[in-house]
Length: 443
Ligand SMILES: [Zn+2]
Image (tube, rainbow, N blue to C red; front, side):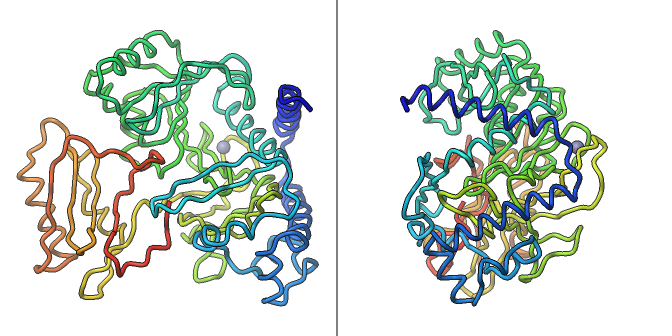
C-alpha cells in the first residue's frame, strides 16, 4: 500500500479506537476482563515467538496456560533494564510486523532500539486522544506549543500533526540564549492565542524561568501537560504561578508508552488500563495499596517487542480512592521518579540519591546536579535565583553533606549559570561515574 494511504488508514483506525475509548466508561470489572483477555493472547504469542520469554518460561517451568489473569503475572520473573538492553534482539519475533523503531539514548550511554507495531501505536494514540480531550485539548484545530529538549536541538518550523488529533504544533527552544532563538520564541508566544503546552518537565521549567526573568513575554495557555520527569511540588508551583492554570502530569516511558495521566479534577493518575498493567512491587511481592514500591509494567498491545513485567526504575503508590471526575480507571496516587543514582563511597558506604537530593532543598536553588567523578570526588553544581546569597548557601550545603558523607570527604560546591540537560532532554540530579558503582538504572 502506498505510504500515504497507509498513513490515512492508521489515522482513521486511531480515531475509531479513540472514539470507542471516549464513549465507554468501563466498569472496573470489565477493565480487568479486557486486561486478562489481552494478557492471555500476549503471553501465548510471546512464548511461541519470542526467544527471551520462551527461555525464561521454560527455565521457570511456566506454560502459557498458567498465565491467565493479572494475579498469575507474578509467576513470571521481572524484566530489568539491563536484560532489555543486553538481549534486545531476543525480544523480537522471527517475522517482524511493520514497525516504527525508536532509539533511546539513556544516561549509561548504551542505546536501546524499541520496536512498536502499528496496532500498539494506534492503541497508544487513542489513549492520548482520550486524556487530551479530558484536559480540554480538542481533537481538531488546537494550537500546541512544544518545547525542544536541549539547547542544541535544531529549530523546527510549525507544522500540522495528524495522529493524535489534527493540530498545528509550534516549537520553541526554552534553553537557547541566542538572540535569534529568543526573538523567535517571543514572537511565537505573542502570536499564539491560548495554546496547549505539551513538553517534558525540565523544558517547561526552563520556559517558566525565562518568563519569570522577563526574558520572554507572559503566556496564557489553555492547558499545560508535563511529562518525562517526575513533577516535584516546587516545579508544579512554579508552573501554576507562571501560567495561572492547573498543570496536569502525564506518566509515560519509552519502553511501555503512555501509562497514566492526571485529570483536572484530582491529583491521582488514571492508568490507561486497557493498554497496560501497572504492578507496584516491594521485595518481589505486590506492595500494599497506598505503600510505595517499584513500578512494573506490562504493555498489552505491543507484539513486535513484547514488554512483560518490566521494571522501569520508578517508584509509585496505588490507591483505591475514587477520582471526583468519575472516571473508573485504576489510580496511581503518587509517582516518585528515579532521578538519580546512589553514590558509593570509597569506604563501601552507599548514600542513596534521594537523600542527597533532599540536601539541595532551598528556596533560592533553581537547579542542581551532584556528580561523583571516576576518582570518587564529588562536585555539586547549582543555579540560583538572582538575589541568592551564594556564600551562605554553600556553607549550609557543606554542613548538610558532611552529615551524610563524613568529615573526610569534601565536595566542591559550584554556583553555575546553567546546567545543560542530557541528550534525552532530562537532567539527572545525581550521577555516579565512580567505577565500583554498578549502575543498573540507566534512564
Ligand atoms: Zn479524574
